[in-house]
Image (cartoon, rainbow, N blue to C red; front, side, top):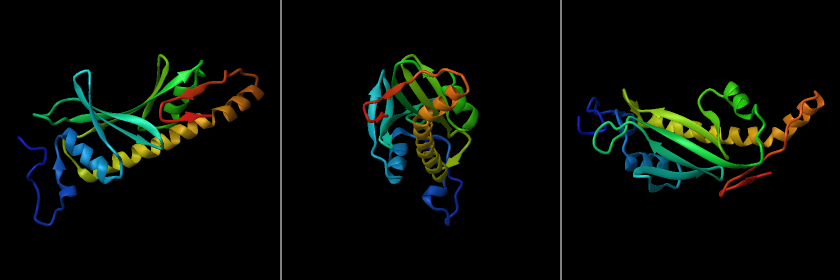
Amino acid sequence: MSQAIKTKQSAAQSPSDLMLDGVGVEQLGEIFKSAGYRITPVEHNGARQLMSASQGIGFAVRFGNPAEADLYRDFTLSCALQVEGDLPTDLAPSWNRSKRFARLSSQGQFLVLDLDVVVAGGVTELHLRSMIELWDRLIQEFLLHLRHRPELAAAEAALGTVVQDTKLDTAQATLQ
C-alpha cells in the first residue's frame, strides 16, 4: 500500500471518515491547522518534527516508527518545561497516578509531558483530531497541576512534610 489512506470507503464517506494506516508530516500538520493550531515543520538531529503551542506552552510532534515512504505508524506529542531549582519528588508520580493518557517525567532540568498516538492498524482523521483535543486538555490540566503546587505544599507543610518551592520557566510562558 503506497498511500496512507486505505481504499475501503463508500461514496457516502467524507475524507475525515477514511481509515489511515500511517500519517505523513505534512498530512498531520494540515490536521493540526484544521484544528486551529499554527504549525512549524523543523528538522532536529536529522528527524522531521512539527512545532506548535497550546495554552502559550510550546510542544513538539515527534514521529516514531516509519510505515512507508514519508509515513509513520505513530507519533509523540511532547512538552518540555525548564525547571529552576528542585522539584518535589512526588510531582511526576502524583500526575501519573491521576492522569491516564499522558505521562510526566523529570529529565534533568526539564519536566516533560508526553502523549503517544498510534496510527497503525487504522484510525480516522476524526480520531487524530480527538487526540489533538485531548492533548490541549491535558496541557490545561498540566498547568493547573503546576499552579496548584503551592497550595499542595501548604497542605503538606500543615501535615509536617517539607516541600521546596520551585519555579518553572519556559520560553513561551513563566508560571508563578
